Length: 217
Length: 342
Image (tube, rainbow over all chains, first blue to last red; front, side):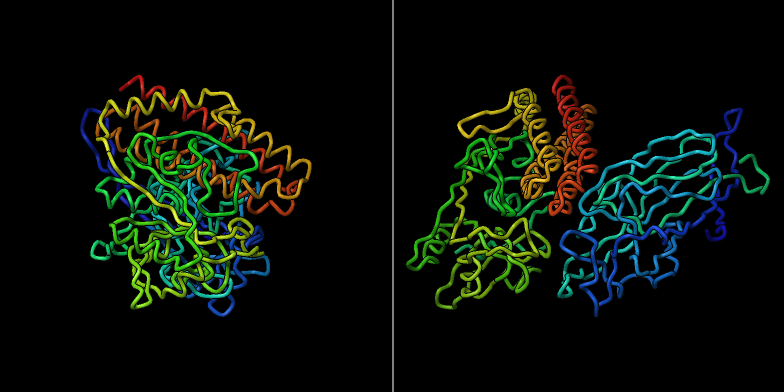
């Protein structure tokens, strides 16, 4: 687990009496380490394109056109820790893994992810009190595709890596997608779906609350 | 010669759910002045023909086995027919067609096409549109909307190697190789393109419901159709995987592409028409039908990755099969609601 990253923003919401009052709130972002769950290689360098295993054709994202391994990638205002390749890979190919999370109250789970074609599935959100909610997760195709589910584009590369060559003109796309935490309760962990087409490269938790450090959250 | 009308690569109609079959039909529809989505997205069904799946990117088992275009777009005056060019001067046949303003669709092996990512690497059966043959220059003008899109001139010798390929079995592509190309080509004729008004839309939605209510084993080929046919297909897939039958899962990937494309386009069209007609139920039906396309991802990719060891894939396959069946049921119900709302 990394330390909190705090960014400030202002929102407006209706106040009693029909007027509107500007309130200050903060978004707190918490990137979560996933590397012990890596089970797939999504990114390859130009000299080792054959190492990629993102899809059934063994295509992969070109490292030369992505953030440095272990560096920060900010999409919109969401900071992700970009994966560092290990011997096990650089991403989670979803197979029902359970990810323990730093306990806390969160509003959003942000995923740096991509799909081998369009993916609609669900996450199981586990709470400290034993409750479990299933929430939809939707991620667009990585293969030269548009955002089908309203995600933010996190990276679109000018080339695609093939096992034996670098292909010009075919983009590989990473998406920044969010999943809501609707229950006002302490989140404990999340189970990924059994969905071989869904890859998660990074996860960041977000909570939104009053600027005061001892607010009601 | 039709190269004056050659679209740019960026101008070719494409969606990320489609295969080259839809892309090449779309180009013929666009050439005739039609809107590809309106024509290709109006019809929706489930149809599986046991024992028929071929390892080609353009495999599709339609209700009219000899007319794939009519099968995909039965509400419009579009028709197609497969041919095999003669041994003697086969390019002359294509030249004759392009000379009459037609856009024949050639089956090709990607291994021999310089603009395909698989060039010199992977054998795979694919479709491209032929715009012109220039015997004097030794060139063929072609277009291909599938990424990386291409529109331009290639060497006639390269085209012929691709068009005449045996497309041998390729361990890098278990799904689209091992299917001879043999100078096949599809001629597409586009005649009447009726306007997609409210009446035609309502008729198409009513037909959606009727087809999905059908029992299985329809027609002379014994197709598995409708929701009962879908259940039978999924049961067969799961039982084959549970038994560890070699090849039990392999066909689901090429077969499912057609079903995924059809659902994706139907859903997109219904959503768009739901905006144009301001019918919320129609927009919701479109999204439900698109969810069918997205559920196909799970079945197709689980099968593709899992086909070497079907038993190992069974646990995940059960979940995707259940989700796909549920998506179809919800899609059909939503289409019925949209039909009532129109």
